[in-house]
Image (cartoon, rainbow, N blue to C red; front, side, top):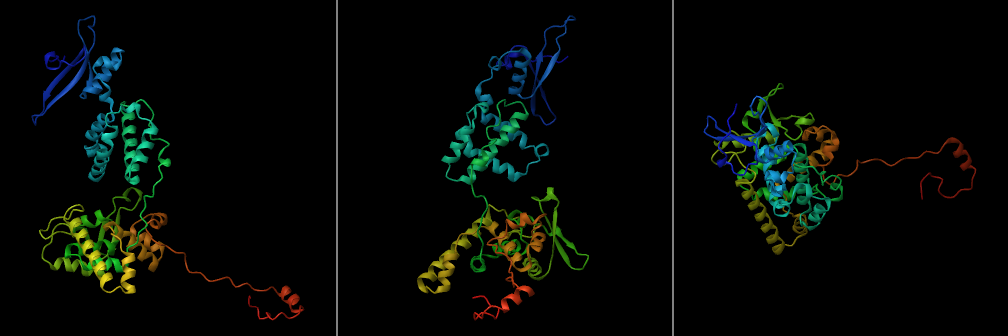
Length: 406
């Protein structure tokens, strides 16, 4: 039988809750909690395991004792949204169990930085839908506000499934009342693209070329490796791009023939003599991070392009310069994928664009095509039936018997 530890080390435990402490091979100390049953007829006192989480152990103790939770030493802060968030992140950081990507974890940590000061101390069972409607109205960035509210819904569902929350999810039914325009409807014109391209350094040019030529998302472009180049059965090479966003819907790898401008781009990168594991790398051969060196240099290129437009507008003031000034906006690196999709659709059609982006349906592809116009069609040419022609031939001449419309 497990012997209880001295109670003086754990003075905050309720009666008949005993801890057991041990050290693993790495030297880390662990504590598990047990409920000590009343003595049996044979004098033994069985122990019921309560787990390693002290708050959950106290909840189980209150259930076994048939007593309110506050008598176990639990307070409202133990069930606050902040406490639930800490437990959620401890679970989420174990990626083998949560199946969450590092990017998702970073995003949810950023959401909490906005939510924590507002809802952190609120008991999770006291959250109401009107709290989040007022929060959404008060936030200046509606897109960020809706993402943060969705994350609260994730926390509530996670807590309800594990017994930390008894009230209904307060987010259910209100997301449709938070209208926003999440999609970007911007299109990077050729003139604007080449203006920024001409002011960029070789590192930024390589990134822009690869993203535009292959229609890649920023993360896909920056994580491509030389090992993703494979011999093609037709001869030559092909680039295999892993599609993490569509891997569950069927398209896991997009294959791109290495020909034309893409082949010249790869040869240009190889010719520099600095080759890392990833195709796009910095001067030291290290992988390029989206939020690091690349972002700074890309913003520098945009700033120089804007200065050039302002200078030319002041000096020349021609119609071409004024038109370029009207088109100017600080486009982002992710806007190159919609540009590639739009240019491809105008030349090859929607079906080919769907294959180019790696989508399973054309509906997904249509979200990336900007300023899409309808297909070019011919007008209808109506013909007169023979019986009508005989009747009309007996009418007086009106001057329009040539069949034209006036």
